[in-house]
Length: 103
Length: 289
Image (cartoon, rainbow over all chains, first blue to last red; front, side):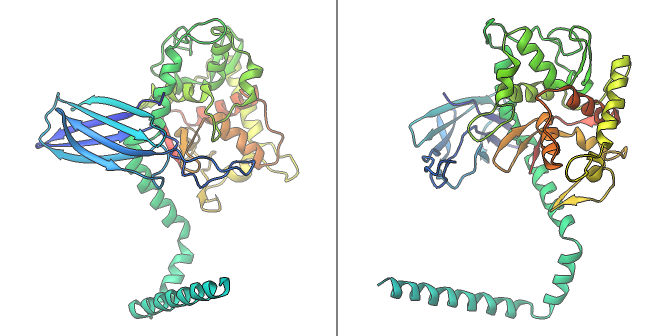
């Protein structure tokens, strides 16, 4: 089970600013361990953000994204008190969804 | 075949080099000399300033928060041989009081008859309340690529509960004053194969190791840097580290024997530096390069 994300969402002049911090190894598959064996790739492949059942952001990620990734984006239309949900899926099929209320 | 391939690669890289050289020449042939001079006089300031910008950008979204969240779960969960949570742990302000506890440690704890820093106290609670063994916790005290030890996340959580508060390390009890004096002695004690003390690197302003500038921990203004930003998320390797690790690693860098985990030596050193930082505002767990 993956660790929870930290999500902050704040609305200003009709634009919602969302900041998400995810807890993930983001292993590239290029590195070797102390014994010289390749550490298998393990990284987030897709990220999506939903607001009122609508997808407001959808992203495809690869191994170039750093460990414990951070993403910030804006979208129009959200209001304070509404919910925003973030979901990521990694290459091992592990998945995590967290929700936050817009401030 | 391999020969031909190699030649193609070489030809290509030669082309790229030529292009690069050409561009540079075209843009600023006269400025080159000036730039070299500038770079030589202020490389440290430029790098430090760049990192400071980055740190500011990351401050409200520091990965340290992920460890705070983990620490909170660990704090509240029933764990260990005694299947108990840490919610009854007394960090100096009464059982379960977390607000402001971190900025008031190290302090004297009557139940243990010792001066304890935050991590030493948390380890004490894990032993007395949850039934863990110090030897087991000391097997891997610091974070590495495969594991972040529980005390590290717990310290980060507790430290986060003192965000934005003034540092007020107490000096009321005689043992607290003794710890300060011993801490100062250790700070200035020169020994080891290199005849180093903490003060060798941290006793003057404007010193650095490679590009990393070193705080002068004997000056009132800079001494806060022994406290600020710790526990810290280190960009290199993406690991969370506490002050226990920082102290331990400083001893290693001096080629001293490394002190035992959560030892009295570290508590004394942290008392010395904490008291010197009194009155400064603590910003909470930070981010390090």
